Image (cartoon, rainbow over all chains, first blue to last red; front, side):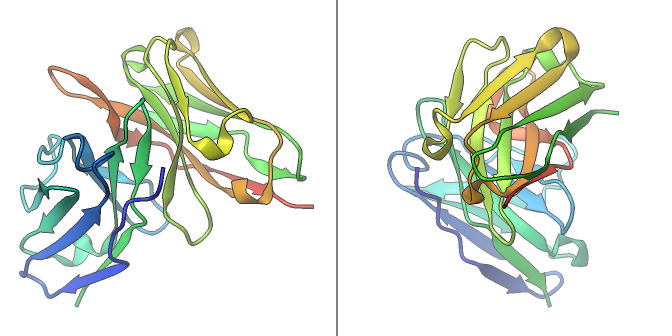
Length: 110
Length: 124
């Protein structure tokens, strides 16, 4: 049950795209198509952005997209906006009804 | 409005116990997986435990197995976390979160509604 690896920080200018990675193992990210991504603003509860690697719940802008290759999942935020500045977390199903989270990535909009 | 509200946090001495509650309103609580997630000060999120919609399956992170017990009362739209033998490493904000249900399937791996959290501090 080791945490997934995310870069501690990422940044981009308004209008640009930024991609955040989430690396696990064949026992979690690589073994299942159940990766989710969350956005958390300071002092707020997390918000679900992506589920099942690529799917967006209703109401989430299509500027947010997810993908996966091998043991690494990625979240891409396109057309960066100031309000996208937040902490982003991934999580993956890890078998036996267990979950594992990434350490989080702080996204700064320059 | 869909809402989850945690309660029961506080300051407890090492070795002590706390029982967290999570009250759901405005949602069909009984068909969703429910999960407890914690966030230690300045740290990332950590999955703690989850429970299937009907309560028949429960899972825990290794660090809390044998000390924490998750339960639910669907008649009361409530989720609980009994925490025993608490230690400093359990100090965190504890969130309850609802598993997301699409039109087709309910997930335990994606949480679409989160409470605001309740703070647990373990200290002498």
